[in-house]
Amino acid sequence: MVPEELFSLALGLVPPWLVDHVTFTVEEKRLDLHINFPKGSRFACSVCGEECPVHDTRDHTWRHMDFFQHEAYLHARVPRVKCQEHGVHQISVPWAREGSHFTLLFEALIMTLVREMPVLTVARLVARPTRSCGG
Ligand SMILES: [Zn+2]
Image (cartoon, rainbow, N blue to C red):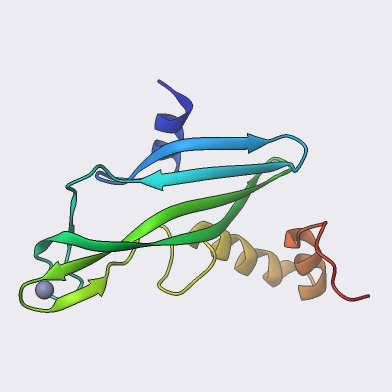
């Protein structure tokens, strides 16, 4: 089994979603997981559930939980499907809430941390160390 397959399993992805490739940057301590789907895949219309063809896609990035000391990000082209009945609209992905820049697991982690620690401490834990915060 290759790492991409293991990551697909670890993220609980179900077909047609799969981890396509993984990039790991040692200097930046960063792990990027690129999720994709095979050409010709169909996705359920979010209104009626009918399997519809992909109309177009939009690139999205989500912050995921760190793997050890490495920041992890998920990337995917999120399809908009064309339903004969309901027209063109974006589908929801199984790993994040609509409009969120975080994966569900990352959100769950943050919500658990803020129950136990001051918000500022949590913010420092999850902030990018390279990011300037103006002070
Ligand atoms: Zn529909």
